[in-house]
Image (cartoon, rainbow, N blue to C red):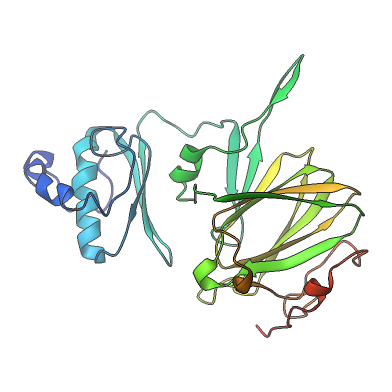
Length: 271
């Protein structure tokens, strides 16, 4: 099946144009799973003019044209991603299920443990699954927090632009109400928030893209939260907004039982 929008229809003629593909090996980063293109995955492209990168992706993709089922291009503020799926793969529900939230770029990830007489086993991260959706896979810091008292509140945190982070957050003990705020100025959801219950029992994670503030309130005593973080912590870049800023009007489960002085000192902002 030929992907919609391809101006080139003769793969034989395009093979002579391989020099264009070789010329951008330093720009396109991908696993070589199927010749010069991945069997299922994404291509990330750097600073290349749109007409040029689009043509170059087409040249590469058409080498596997007979097997191609879907071809999608996505453009975000810092990269362009091409997603390729081949015939016969289908949409199988595997050990991880991804649902994009109402805030574009933020994903709810649900793991599906395999249980037997010994207990259970669950996959909590898979680079291939993340790559297929154009998500970050490099997490340079893994952290955890323990909150002793129910209704402890932490947030709303982020690092400023040059040090902006992607986070993947889960609750490994107890339960929390996890909240994210879209602070991307160019987003149609700027200033909007979303909340999710994460617990050791519901096997959920939240993928939080750059440009979001994050925080949570514990729903149990002794709650433990795990974080995968894409950037190193840089104290001068650490910032935040108030959890009770009327501009966001976050509906928290309860008044905070414990909150740090630092979190109370974040500024109020106008949206």
